[in-house]
Length: 402
Image (cartoon, rainbow, N blue to C red; front, side, top):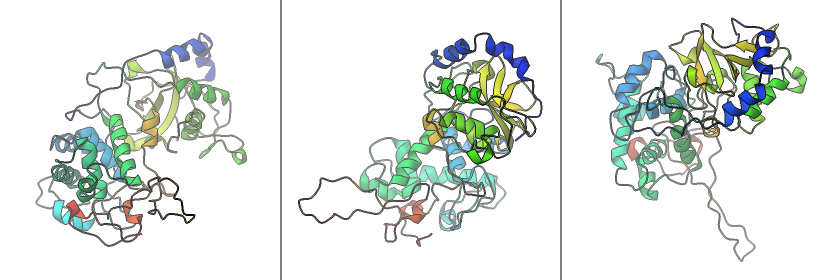
């Protein structure tokens, strides 16, 4: 990941030496507002979805009261990383990762071309919204948060949500609901353009870590490991900086983009992640990230044959910033070894096995059996054989998958 236009460390030294500590401390800990409360009609924050999909997500994200454009965008991102060609190892297809049987029931012609194609991203967006809203109707009488119940039904089936009268006690389903709701905040536009974004208390520590690495040579793929002589690339540096304050970010820059809300240029605070992209209308083209320190400068690992240094942020490919939150970082999807998103669920997957419930120790010495847990980062398809099937809208059990 290369920063194409870099300043010099000397140019930034004046900014840093002239009150760096005060700048970081005030910028990090001064209250700049409260977290945004988004309604179902909330729009998308600029630059958070590929421009080719934005109008469709804005339109179909308002299909029913329980859906919103940021929620639909977060769901699509979690499922496929906005890759229309995504295919899972068990046959889930396209941007929304539909199983063929579920697509047969809920596939929707989103672009009015007379075809329903799971590989067409506009059809996939419309179909995901159609399926969400059908599930919302199926569980509309279940008490609790309606969006949470809808998402739980998408992951585990409406039968499970009805049975448990809310989000079922499945580890993956509970994580899926939590992660989608948290990620949706990264996609949501502020209530007003000037609305402030809450500042992270961990930002000063992340900057301090990065500052201790100034002058370290760049290494493509570097994570700072001993065998790498403590060297980093751009996203390796930001990942390590936030790990030093207890926040685990994804490894690549275009995933780190979704680790929190997006402050505008005039709302930047020290500790924000700042990003560059080759196509400012498509966040999938993000190729560089740094840590903002104030005064228009960042700390970053710029490119091969350079060292970690201060650089100006106001260059042609600057796409925006992210204010990292613990919830936002934790909610981001895992990736396969080849970089593909590990989808957290697939429409039509069978339900998962409930997580074990702690019980008092029995008087007899024999151990009590517990239900097997779903491994973290895997879908309900990996649940134990014999779990009740969710199917499309709870229509029955589908074949078990690996």
